Image (cartoon, rainbow, N blue to C red):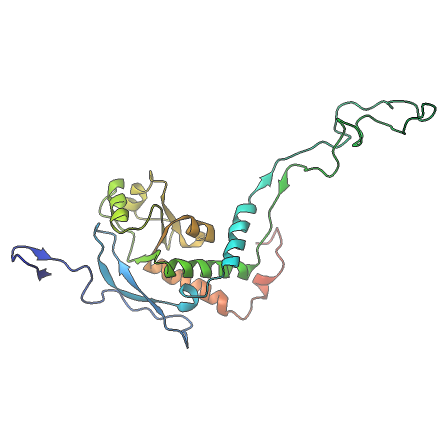
Length: 267
């Protein structure tokens, strides 16, 4: 602490004079690109305090963003669970039409065997939608991987990605977390990501009634959720795990298993 102005007042610096964050050893160290340095922040006070610097791998958090791949991921996430219930009846399902409307010959009219033929008004519909229609399809594996890499890189480049030491809050009051988000200009919506789906009690209770502040484990992180929220907040452990998983897939030499054709019954 430092004396600032009046000797009775204590001034707490916004950043730590010594790096209290343990340095990380990057997996697959980059040869030609420098790692990205990010401040580690705290959540135990409303005012921001920088605890130290950590390095993030540039292949995951500083890649050249592919907007087309991000769009493919968003479209896939919107469609793979969508089921269309639009339904039209074919000629055998329309009520009536069992009797031949008029004789085959003798009247000079065209030949018809049923008034529910698709040629008739009120008849069946050919090539119409039939329900339920699933729009499920599987996006290629590395398109999904590159979608996560591109979205993380965009978030970091736009200063919408923040790293915190943990998600521990001193209070379970929703007003505390709302005031914290407002004071740090994190935008209207925030996604907190931790290494496990069992979150600390205080932040779970504080965000339970706030729809625009959401919690998510690392295994559920996806492109659509990151784009839906203005700010992405990762814990140091979550950032390390995300980095490890994506780098493993980017550098693996046995990608046949994950790039083979998708089977519905595969494990």
